[in-house]
Length: 240
Image 1 (tube, rainbow, N blue to C red):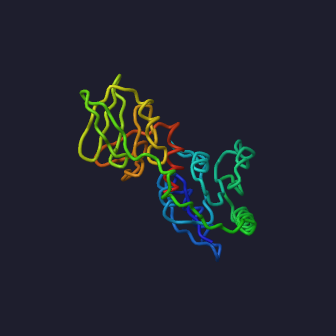
Image 2: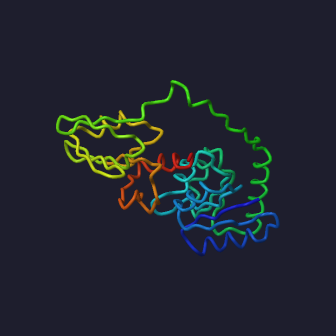
Image 3: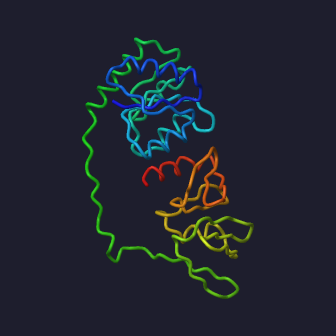
């Protein structure tokens, strides 16, 4: 089995890591002090189980579980007991360990993880339909600038920002200001490519270079992420 450890406290990570080293068939492939970095790692690599602190600054363990579409098995670690019952509402959560974690309690948790993995159905290959039919959506957006219609390809649009009664559209090579609302533009943009991550910003999420704390980096632009929109952004990135 493979696992990662996610906890903002270095001592807590070290304790879980020590317990993991006592399990012969368990390999720790990553340790993270925040949920965002752990999610980015899981976008690139599958693991069997995540040992996850439920209380972390900015992005809780529950946010983490809700964000991932195909979440690994999760064992929550925390100093509180108040979330114990609520935690089991999530299928991916198989156990809940209260700190300080003893070796015996950790071994019991490992047995629960192994039992849950045995019951897990085999993965079904993803079969997609042929996109080359008439169902393909339009690829362009037309904007009105000084009574001229300008065609923008969806894939060249980076960021759309609300500016009062106007919006700024930033593309790969140029920026345009249009007299309209963010909502009207959002309705014209395909959801497969674009996502609103803040009340004032819509981004082309395929253009994201990095995610840092409460913002994303697109080219040299730092775009804020609102707390309410962050779980959907993380879920969408996990599909890429």
